[in-house]
Length: 147
Image (cartoon, rainbow, N blue to C red; front, side, top):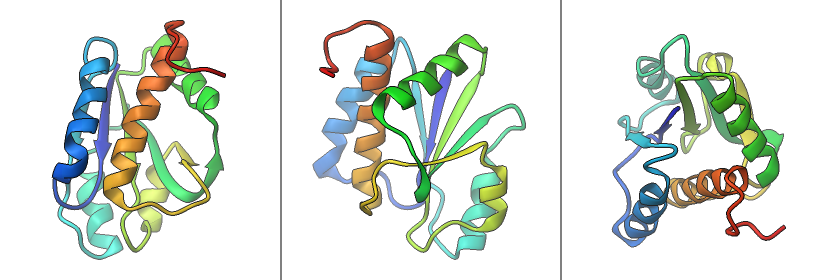
């Protein structure tokens, strides 16, 4: 399975790029990550740009602070379900600075929150990449996750 992370805005902030890259390297053989950075704009324009990147067979997870609260083992279980179920691509969409248009919400198969706190996009990119690595580590029985 491949992962696509869509985050409207600029490419990675240099302060976080090395950390994001480190988790991508750890995942590359198990869960390769691809990034797409649509131009930021209105909620409607962002939704249109994002939807153009999606395929019907994608499993789309919208990251939004109003989404379902999922812990690390829950994210790991979601990854496992789709790895075992033959999903070809799982797409994580980081909501725009002004929220997400309803058309994009309707496209999403699931909406989850990483926290009740609100984070800047650049930090969310690092958090989701680390959590994907942590989730795979749980599935692979690695000692990275200490719960």
